[in-house]
Image (tube, rainbow over all chains, first blue to last red):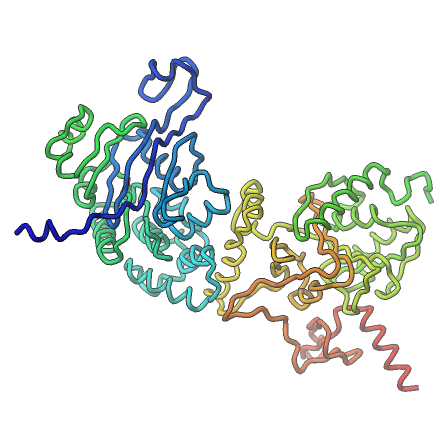
Length: 283
Length: 283
């Protein structure tokens, strides 16, 4: 019985986030003591992220929960370089063996990391897709950005991926603007997976979808994660989603991590006041 | 004639500012240099960018040729010539080989240009990435980071939809292995003429307030894919109905009497020269 536990190899660290900060405003001495949630009444600075540190291990799903405005999406956008960070360090095992802080890289290198090592699915498909271009082109864009120049090979890969996320073949050449929300989300997932990134960032992927579609998208994520062994960071305010998918979970409040641990642990035995409230309000 | 205007219409300060932008454009091949585009006596969209380049460059010893879609006698070309002659008194010509300065709309002359000539092209849309990215701020950054997947994406979308790259004119080019550039709406037929051109090519966009350049003997490569190589328009088996040329860019005309399609040289200078040569042979 104990064999399985012993045989497991120690998991490799894929990503290492250290002391990430994101503030909007100049900051002042009283920011440290007088904050109302994440807002400083003296200088008007908003501290969207305050000293966020966590590790991500190979092929795990890390869930991030928190109420709206707690900094979940800001965190994702900072990791994907959509937003500047105020300070902090991020190390990525797949880039220079995890020895270089990717936040300090040049714009060109950041773009390389975005295109080769990350896949991102936004809450709002408008941000992640070119709505007027065909779905195939939307996936090919990521491949083109990664340096591919063979049109037929790219079209084939895009068709495979769209098939994988259950977009019917006769709709593959349609533009995502003519798709339902769930389909758009699935195109985004296919696009994010197109060049086998080691890390997939999912930002509220099921929010706003109806329950049956939600279940389909969640199934898909689970399936992809099992098949492709991709590491996933999953943001959601829905504890049901977190419970179903995440191995480990981080709870955020007002730009800070208030609790972290195994998902089961957090849901069964929440320690922080806010987490308790969150778990108890779960329907 | 009102001779109280400045030589070549502009005051010296204006000419100097435009020439400085031209110098910068030549130094960074393919890079769009912003300049203070002036109000001109012709409307924006009628070649004000090209006209400003011409007026800032023209000297008393210059000979000017102005072409509009291959024709020396269209309204646009004639009016520009009239303005330059009225303000400078320099001679004009229809013959490409006689001109020192050639302003052109949508064509590069068929006759090969020499290294003591300057070709000025009028540009409506200088930004090759505008189709995929509406924000100037973002496209500037994309150029800085050499991120050109958007330009390829437009071509890829054509392949998905139509099975080939369907650009009729303004097929984007890579200049000096660095900047992707809109070659102005010249037909694909003319794109290869830019590569290693002995003549300096200047491009001016009056409404968009941009000047850019292809210096003499610079590498210019049309964007394409490995399995869909760049191809010029093919006029295989067709000949000019007037001069019999089979190696020029041909316009398709419908014979109003018979309803049959006929072909004719688009470049009137080249066609007239060939006609004269043909007449000489007959004698």
